[in-house]
Image 1: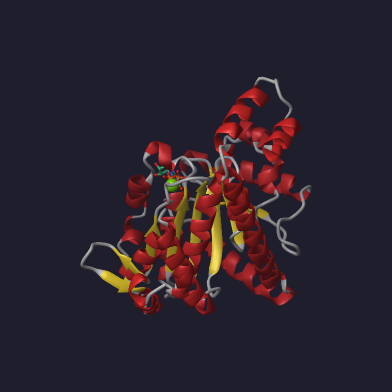
Image 2: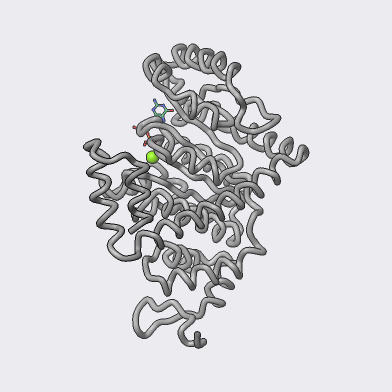
Length: 335
Ligand SMILES: Nc1nc2c(ncn2[C@@H]2O[C@H](COP(=O)(O)OP(=O)(O)O)[C@@H](O)[C@H]2O)c(=O)[nH]1
Ligand SMILES: [Mg+2]
């Protein structure tokens, strides 16, 4: 490939060499960071290749942040919590990147606007970078984009990466797979919710916070916290050597929010000391590689002949019990 081609063209007149973008990202240039992320999110194979080169160049400067995932049902207060938490932490001179994963965003047009208004202080802060969820494609695609975006943000010198996700479907497991510390934000009156809440999610988290512990809700929040605490006792911790606990907070009143930051600092110290921190990151990298390989194989397989159409047919027939899943896969391979 010629040098001239290794550029990212936005308009015809304007093209920036990828080495320049890398350099500028390293210097904390936000528009360069946004450009880099646009490459990552692009559908064009040329852009994706450039993105890959960019990440390669920046890889030596990644890994220096603490990566925090936040999950919870819509309305639990995640965005508000991030606004409060982030505002506390930037005051300590930390730089924060907020990334969102919203599996519903392609349908609803995104909660981007809602989030930006909830994060008013943060979105105007020079040490904070907020990037809404990539709206495109599969969960696997979104996972790749978010992971790669995370790396660019680290190269740009952000100390904390917060990944907000809506607690639906498989997005939680996916976020767990890319962060160091995983937090569940939930609410009181969760009697039903508690029943319905899969044990699965509780075994993914490093802490549970009952939000909106204010006004009339305060006492109920404490009760819910105790219920969660009891449940947590019976479960396998997500992180070896760390006992997840339940807490209460009010994101709006900034109560119990800074305590979580102290907890996360403690978590990082302890887990670095025990070696668990590094170990998890290594495993995550390997898992990531394997996941990407699977995704590519799947795409490659379906791109041959008319397999994609055949798969659609087989899906229908499997749904109608005319064909067993095993038979369907056998046929796809045979054809
Ligand atoms: N009373 C109370 N309301 C809150 C608190 N945190 C968030 N809210 C409200 O809950 C609603 C949903 O908040 P949001 O941050 O958008 O939730 P998200 O969907 O989880 O991101 C908003 O109306 C917030 O003002 C809190 O600590 N106390
Ligand atoms: Mg939100």
